[in-house]
Length: 152
Image 1 (cartoon, rainbow, N blue to C red):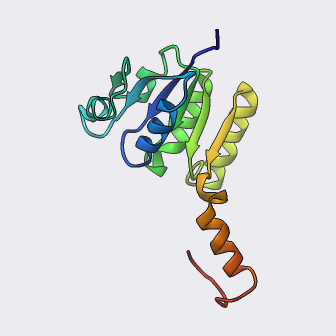
Image 2 (cartoon, helix red, strand yellow):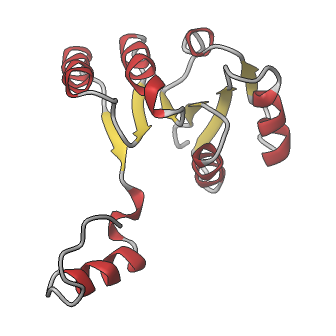
Image 3 (tube, one colour):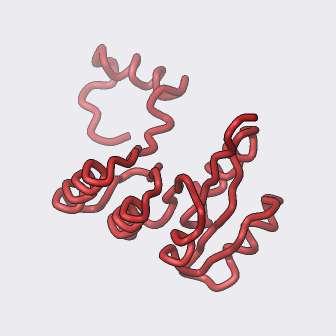
């Protein structure tokens, strides 16, 4: 029997739905917890909307991190990435965090140090980097067809 990987999703807006739908499409993944600490009740609404069976709603990430979870997807506003990364790693969770890893360079360095100290996986989601649209944009920009590109 294949091991079931238990996932918690920290955040319940925007990109969190993309993470949840991807996990729901995988046979060996079970979303067991969702947290939303900005709007009370939003985590349960997210669970109900996506039909995530058996998931528990939490208001605070530290409460959720006490659960038997193998890994977390951190889908919070950028300013919360640093603290949630650190807390998840210290509680023995594998971490997939949306970009950016943290807001400041010092915070990023600290998160990477904690990942090394805890020997836990830390991955930053750069999902569109290799999709067809991004490859096409790169093919247009690299030869200089658009001149100097300052922002995309």
